[in-house]
Length: 296
Picture (cartoon, rainbow, N blue to C red):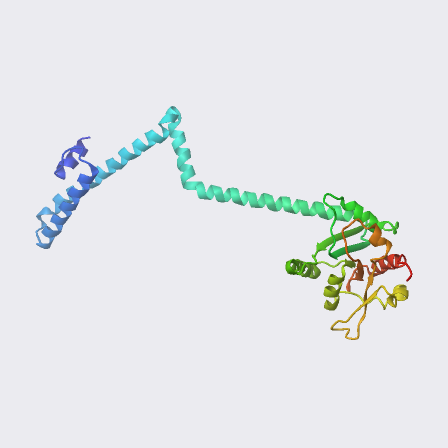
């Protein structure tokens, strides 16, 4: 403590002067030193070095005192474990960002591993399924009842084809209301570009929207449907590649499918996707239900 007493004395201060008093006193001595140094008098150089050393010593002890008081307040409650608690706290303060970053990285790695495992599991599940026989997309005013099991629609679609083992379907609802239709059409367009079903089951509006885009296969080229391509159920459209027009859809609204299908619907028009993977099965599906349309 003697060196601290000497430091206060060197600065011309009383022992235990406040930090503010020390700062103020040192500023005064610095100004004096600047004035003396301008005069070219070297006599006070050593004295000012002693003042500066005393100033630094006092501030260092003040910092130690503050640190000790802080540690006592923060870690005193841990008593004998105070040292370990302090080290742990310091570690957390210095390495918090790195630790959080490492945790986040581990989380990303775990998520990636789980996603990969889920993907592989899904691939194994798909590989265990029988080959796809038909993929159907409903587009328009089609809606299942709330809480209805998906198997009801699936069974209705597959019932006439016992030899088929696998059929999948999806529904893109597009309302009749023109005010709300635009947003749904945007979704339908995205689906049209990203998914390739074999068979579309549509209402009249969606048939007239989808057909001119070249997404449907001409049905009057298929001999299985020749008997219906000239009938009342045949629906013609013109496209950019087919300006003369062809039959691109068959209206099955009076068929058994319309009566048996457990969905909300207004009309039921069938069309085959132009680049379908299973066009023969799609045509077979349409042919079966076209036969159930009552004669005029």
